Length: 417
Image 1 (spheres, one colour):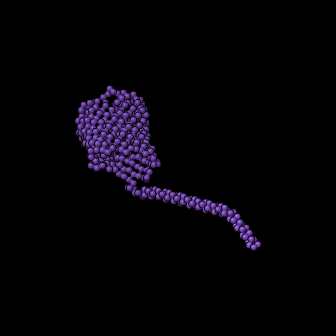
Image 2 (image 1 turned 90 degrees about the vertical axis):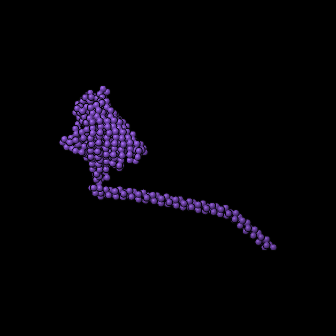
Image 3 (image 1 turned 60 degrees about the vertical axis):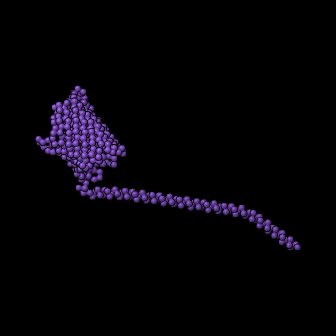
């Protein structure tokens, strides 16, 4: 019996000890399990972070590789272009072009003006242009006027352009030689298929005066998209009192031109809107006679124009004016010489266009007492047999303050290639 009680007592003690042990170990086991889960989570996050880093590094490496490949392709294309340019033959780097026009004028003169009934191959022009490389070019233009040239003949052989042009960079180009002055609408672009009317308009002919070229140097700066600035220093005009200081008669045409007084010309042109060109030019010359006297001194030319085309409708408008100082030029009213024209047109078919033009010009506008203002209406049609071949017909009505009028019609055919 005593043994049985002893065994019960021992069993109870062992049971109590076991329960105490369990009570102590359960929280410890719970804490150990929590620490284990936290460690596993941290390890998982570290693994995810490393994987993300590896992914970013792989993407960056792929981008760097793509950029390197793209740059290599660009350089390869540039090298190929340069190589191909070097491989081009002389003939492949040389271009030949030109234009010409035949006129028939049937005009009745009034008030002392002469009748005009004649056929004239007014101009025969050849272009010869050569590219020495991608940045350096030669541009030339040779013209025969009125078919025959020589002593006692009506025509002339003229070099209207012969200049070297060099691209300093993508935005800036320089030129030197004999070139067309950057002023007006027609002076630089005057091929027959590019304008309406058989004859070039009277304002740009007598006031600007087109076609006007000179020897010198110039820069073209492509400022931004649609903006271009041209500037040039070149031989000036040499007007004379014998012809009332008329601007057109002052062109020296770079033939042993007097260069005592050079001229400066600049132009700003905007073409950012499709179909629209706006431009303004300015020229200054300190002595328009090249004579260094007070007959006619400083001369300023101001010109502005707009060219607009939208669908079938077209419009050209231009103003040009001279302000000239000097006693002799003022005495004959030539201190102010100016003109204006407006020319709307309408394409009635893809290759047929109608136009009308109203022009006013005066080479002695400085003196209101001198009857020198000229007014002219032109109405006509252009028929393009090809984009580069045109047949023209127009009627002109000219009324001048002097009473010397010329009215009648003109026919013409012109081409460019």
